[in-house]
Length: 161
Image (cartoon, rainbow, N blue to C red):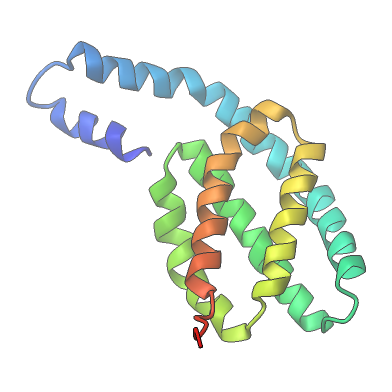
């Protein structure tokens, strides 16, 4: 659940909610049906989306080892699932805490950043083609945060000479 909503609910035992607090809860509740619909759409079309990404990734990077492509695809699938749950909960911290903590260390170990960058681009393109623009707009903040954080955490520092 969104941390701000949790904080409001924790305060509710001490007093009735203020109009601002009620507005935050109302906004959360009103957006829930759209977020549920987006989540269901992703769940139901995950195989189709990821198969297209896998096909495009292999065609784009034929020189890469199959095991590296598979590793990147598995991580991309995890990224999509965690982002979908973060979107459903309307909680970016869910993605930060659950996915990015362990995945960023794993990605740097296998040195597949180039594959991941291509995968993220292909995944974003495939999502835009497969699910509705409204669902993409709900998911995008989570995907962008996760992808940017992973790319930053696995970037290899370069020496300036």
